[in-house]
Length: 450
Image (cartoon, rainbow, N blue to C red; front, side, top):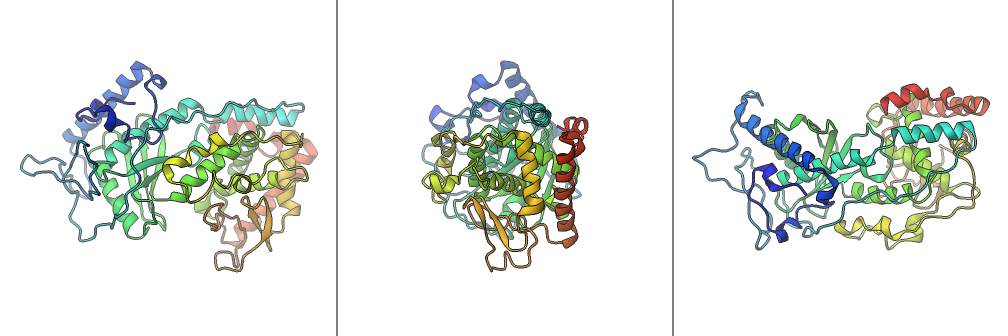
């Protein structure tokens, strides 16, 4: 854990420290020099924040005034015996979020090291290419530690605004399907109940954005508040050079992170197959929800669904077999335990990675009925589309395993849908004829992007 001097604050007592991290990194995970470097960067960030006259909304305002007594913004129920930190309000507004139920008390939880599983054997050229691409491009433990380090520091900073909030690392960085170039996704939880994204979440992120622009301007680069349907703050960590997206109370994103993480390490062919398919989709420009194509999350669910629906399945439905591990009622501070309670899955299917990649492309090119079926990892099968507005007249239907929404709703133009279908068909034909990954994904370019 990082010394509190990094943030220029009085030290915590041991009892207080255990409440401030969700995934807590032990000191052994970082070298002494890394701690010194991190302390130097943060101290200089605060010095630069005070000394530089950077523009913000036309005029930069100082955070600390010697003539004003600081107060805590949006203070929830005080934690007994804890040292209080405070700061002045960032701006005056008549709207204050109704944060009435805070998240459970913080508990010290070990940092999640990836489960060690041997990689599958590659007995043919195509399978060997997939494995080599995976080993070169997969996210390293060192990449994950950089993101976790930033999360820990930012959580402490955000707790100046919302003392009992908690910051979670979610998405591909933690679910096992990340690459070396994967961005970091963060979820700020202020209460374990829904938050109105148009009002509460936007207000909370406005405060966070303002805090980043002032107090952390020397440490965080280009913070932007994106006022989308689900608002986010985008920023870049200058030390790790990682791009981050931060949302508020996307609870389902935390739950599905650990569901996918369990699938990722359940069988040793899953992660290499997902990585190569994400690379393939990105190369052919069908992996960008902001441009009306498939999100990485939808692609992962599509791969898992395919592996569940083989004549001899490679994956089961974890939610059916272990309902107690993946219940939506489990409190957030216990969700991380699910992957630890599920043993590896032993499948009788011995298909190679090359055969599975070919089968995946063929399944969605020729077998899956896009017009009437919905992809369901929860049910481990294709099921009829519901008749609700979420599914009506949609081109691709991929069920979110926890809240039942359509993760592929971004594909709302027939032209984009036709491009996606066409790419599955063309790639299947090319790969079937050549059995060379370069025929559908230039490996040199894919490795350079990592």
